[in-house]
Image (tube, rainbow, N blue to C red; front, side, top):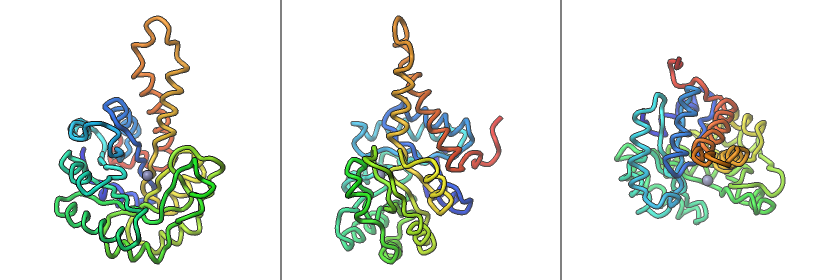
Length: 281
Ligand SMILES: [Zn+2]
C-alpha cells in the first residue's frame, strides 16, 4: 500500500518506535526492501537519493507500482533532494515524500527555501522532511561529528516557520563509514524530542551501533536512514557464494538475500516489526 511518509512517522511517533528507511536505487534492492518489510509486517520508507538512478521518472514508476501492490505500508522518499526543480521532478515521479537538504545554507536561507517547497508539496499532499544542523560524513568524523549539531531553540523556530512534517537532526551520526567511534548525544536528542512538535529523523544509521540505534528509537527518533550497512551485507552475501559454474546466474538473488537479512535485523532492532496492523500468515 502506497502511503505518505507523514502517516508512517506520525504512527511511529505515537507508537514509540522508528521506521527503517533503506536507501535503494534500482528494481533489485527496491524489491528486496519491500519483501523484507512484508516478511516482518513492518512499514517501510523507501529512500532514494537524487541522482543515484539515472532516470528518476522510471524509478518512480517502478517504486510506486511495487508499493501499491505491497502487503505493508510503503512510503517513497526522495532523499537529499537537490534543487527545487529536482524536488518537483520527484513529486512528478510519484514520490510521496521529499527530503530537502539545505543544511549547509544559512539558517535564514534554509528556512526560506524549505518553506517554499513545503507550501508547494503540501498542496499536493506530499510529506516534507528537512535537516537542521548538518549530518556530515563518517570519513571526516573527527570534525563532522562535533560540528553543527542541531540547536533545539533554532530547531523549534525552524519547524514553526517552515511547516515541515519531520526534521532530520544532527546528534552525532554521520553518513557512510565512520572513521572512529560514533558518539551519539542522547541528552541533546532528548531535549530535541521534548521541544520539537514533529517526528525526528536520524541520517547515517549504518555503523552507528545497534545499542545506540535502539536507544535513539526509544528517545523519539521515528525514522532511521540506512544505506552502507545494507549494501555491504548484500556484497558479503554475494562474495561468500560459489560463483563458479552457473553460480553467476544467481547474482541478484545473492545480493538481495544479504540486503534483506540486514534490513530485517534493523526492522526488529528499531521496533517496527508487526506495526502494520493485522499480522501476515
Ligand atoms: Zn542523509
